[in-house]
Image 1 (cartoon, helix red, strand yellow):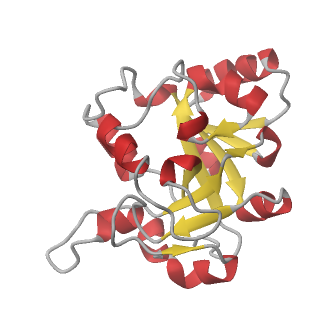
Image 2 (tube, helix red, strand yellow):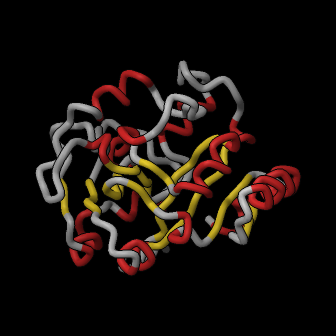
Length: 208
């Protein structure tokens, strides 16, 4: 059962981005440079640059660093199916950055959360941690299978509920990294050594 009071927040990225993130923090799309190894759909990224956030601190969705509430997201599914044009690697080169809500709040970071994919006009926003227990569909987050059904046509979009942190997330907010296997864990440890980070690396099956 997931913790709806102090949930884990997950962001995945390519290993090639890890050293820069360790040095500068996780940046919102609108603050990132052109040399980032992309993991998202260009068409969706463009929509995030125009989708307004109706709560303070406002701006657009691309002004926020995005997180999911569960692993095995629909976006990851798209990557596995080869449907993300900009992604030219495989899933073993992805690494999850993990933090809990309490660490985000302790760092004084501004955030909002949506009950489904943030680009959708039907998405509802909240900035109150007390709302998350009801705002997020935790049953969907815990489910192994979250595809739409004839009875429920929005399961997929609710699985894509987002936690959005304004501007950037300092590296110190993350407590763990999750990777696929020992080989990648060793590679990540080497990269973190290059970035002079002491963040622990755990295998995904032990963390998520």
